[in-house]
Length: 117
Picture 1 (cartoon, rainbow, N blue to C red):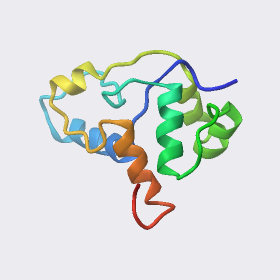
Picture 2: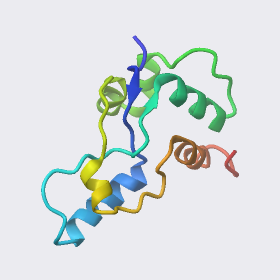
Picture 3: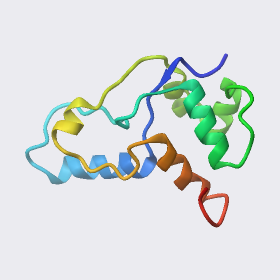
Picture 4: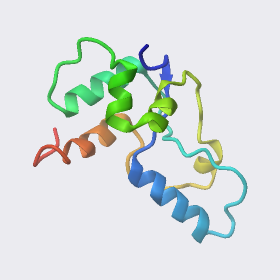
């Protein structure tokens, strides 16, 4: 089993900032979708992640690899093929630091390498 046909995702820094944004701003009410504004395909995720990690992207990541890397709960989110749009988050003009998969994976690569690629 591989990742779903579309992936919703969010960088952990943006998720934390979104929670703070919601708590600190009284005008923010109701349910917010904690996802990045960019909806990507499995192939786009695989390609971006592989590039950031300086590895080839021959095949999509199998689910067990995603489970190992991100944990079962996060992997479940990634393997769902649903399209989730952060409509209200965007309406509130939340300032994403990593709105696209390239910037997010580039930053994650700094955890493994001294400089991002």
